[in-house]
Length: 432
Image (cartoon, rainbow, N blue to C red; front, side, top):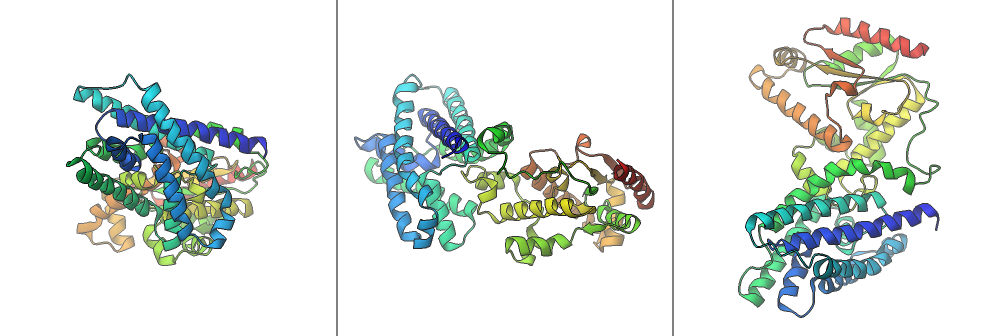
């Protein structure tokens, strides 16, 4: 085992303790507990076993059940991750009891406002721990691995199965409470709040862990493209809907004699990811609900590269295609967060096309064939989806002027003039 893997395991152990501390804070707030520990918390309320001890027992049950859902090939290929669940389950359970009974023995808020404060502090701590666990990418806790096994067996969407799993645990906790304590205890508003806010907090804090990449990953195997020798000039075009970004790309392609990649990505991404082209047409570059996506995915222990979410698989596939195109030829790439994917590429010209609403409506009607009465609504819908997609996957602000080399107001500036302006900058980059 090399030093980088040792560091990953060390980071994972730290994250395990932080997660336990977060759960203890949430539980000590006395407003319920997180969904994943709802069953164990309720069981601890009417039995002599602690929440940590029940956590160990429940996680070991998950480990046993996984055997019935995994093929022999699955178990053989993932044996290390499977076996690691056992010591992780014992460690996590002990960490929870350590935090509950020794570290946070003093925390017993009585007034509701202090209970809410403790709950929110716990949610932040838990989110910090989950984000750290994702960054370590060394192992998985039994509950998360159980969901992964179910997803792989039944070919479902990880996020929705994880949500269903959490809801099932909460329902079982309520039934146990009703059966043994004649009322619902241990499941309260804090359970719902933690389920709703932890994911978005994970999304917010995750980018701050990028400084750990060099510490936990050997440079020779790090999944970072080497752009130091990049000789091709790549133009990326981010655009508001109706601003004519694609049309500008077509004009530049003819003017500069380089290839335009936009709709071609659908076929290329389908081949790379194994997805249906119609699915990609319908879903690429759109996250209808940013909040829902955070809840479904960002409270998961899965890193983006190994995620079972179709959206994540598609984004990773398209990002790799963009990197390969930049290494192969000078070209124009429309959308696909290309400006972010190529942020370290030495010869990239990043454009952002925008327009006032009236000009965007006119273009949507004349160029895209959209009915005038529905054009404004469609513009706002598509732009909202593009914002959510970009900001979810990059952690950066879409349309922020400092992120681009040229901001082109295609309502005030006709496309031919914009094309000539970009051509001049492009030729300057070619000579550099």
